[in-house]
Length: 123
Image (cartoon, rainbow, N blue to C red):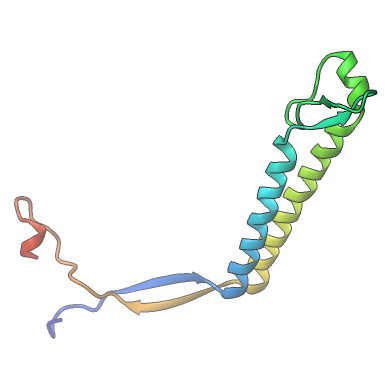
């Protein structure tokens, strides 16, 4: 760097270790919520075989499957909602509690603006 060149700075934002861990845990909650919401549901019928109740995202609309499945679709929808709320609380709370690190660094490297027709190999 030449003596008369102005020094440029940049701000680097990095999540703290605690924030990264809580966001990782929150992502597990999000995956579990998606699983609970879209997993195919079934209940045993009178002969012992499974009766398909579709999923919490797409509950049965006909009266007969509704009566056989009961409230299993609502139960899984509530579980998915609770897991998603837990993910938001854990992720947001972890970020608020542990925060992010901000520091100012000297910008390094070649910052000369490219001139039209000039290749990057010449820089």
